[in-house]
Length: 396
Image 1: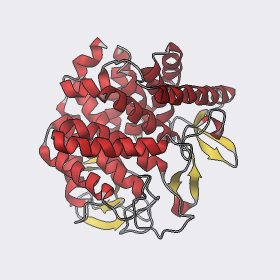
Image 2 (image 1 turned 90 degrees about the vertical axis):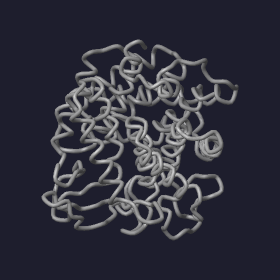
Image 3 (image 1 turned 30 degrees about the horizontal axis):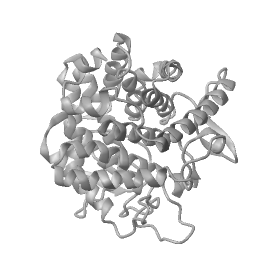
Image 4 (image 1 turned 135 degrees about the vertical axis):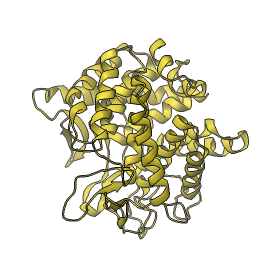
């Protein structure tokens, strides 16, 4: 843990993310962790059967079969990240051994310049590894990945390009991209090179300026002219329509601006995170159990799918947000995060041991417009659920 302290000197951050605490405080939590360990034993075993194949990272279920992906899938970092959180929550060494195995399998991603999702992949795996290990090599992976990600930065527009150019978009930037900034901040701390920090701040500032509507909901995709910074289009890719509030997109924004405030202490980012949180919390279409529909503006029927992944991301972000605000506001957001987690821990959303092919949570949505991964488990829903569980325990 000594190495982690040298990287993250902010005391409150250490309380929430870096310090070991006594493990679960209630029998109910212990039952959940027992179930989680049994489930991830299943996932690890099924993955090892596929070890000789390039695709052996569990992502979801399709037609009752587990779908495995390669290291170059944008979700590949979440499975090792979940293993790191299981180690954090249980102190069981087997989870650390397994986490190292799956983390180091992502080694080549540090050189990949073809997608912005390297932030998701490497920070969730190697970033979490550095909270548990003292490894110069892991630090080097973080910095090299930041170098690769930085090649997608357009200085005149002030943004990091998300997907590659194509027929539909010149330079698409999605709200999800806010989640990649943590990697850049991390790399700047390790390397003492402010380049990565400055790129992250530029992207956050441009997103803050352009991505949000007057009600503090966000567009999913903005299309930029990289030479002038002009916005060519405001679209969606996974939401109901261009002007709707795609549920997971709102959660990405909340999480991303909370992280940006943590790393910069610029109050404008904290205010934006609070505005997004309040948009979600007060939305008239938010169900009573706090688990949102896949898009806040999509027509609602008894068959409209929920998105558990959006709920888990929101809960995790709220636990961190709570440490940066006044005591009066803190209670409101903690109570809301706890309410989300209470729902996620219920049998409606949390699988019994031996069910759901080993995944923890039911009822997430990948991309409904593309008829992809609708009402299924997703590895990133599990990841943010375990992260939220870890953050909640540390706050106690």
